[in-house]
Length: 136
Image (cartoon, rainbow, N blue to C red; front, side, top):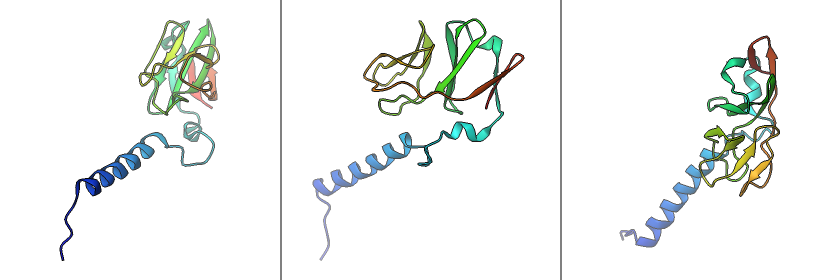
C-alpha cells in the first residue's frame, strides 16, 4: 500500500523545517552562557576615530556594537536584540536600532529606549589602547 502525502502532512513537515531553521538562526550561543564574541579575545574592531560621538558602529561578524556616548567614552554591547534575536542594524539618533520589530536601545548603557525588547542589550568587554578598540 502506498502512502499519499496529504496537505496536512506537507504543512506539518514544512512547519517543522521552518521551526528548526528559525532556532538555528537565532540560537547561536552554543548554550555556554557566555558570548562567543569574547572567544576571539584581543581582536581589533576599529580605530577610535571610526566610532562617532553620540553614535556607534555595528560589527556583525563579532555580534557586537561599539558606541561612543560622550567624547572618549566607549561602550560595547551585544548586537543581538533581546526581543527575538535579530541583529541590530543601525545606530542613529542616540539609539541602537533593531530592524525586526522596532526595538531601540540607548547608546550610553544599552537600556531599552523603545520596545518590544524586554531587557537591555548585554554589555560586552572591550579595551581601548591608544586609538585602537579591541575585544577584551
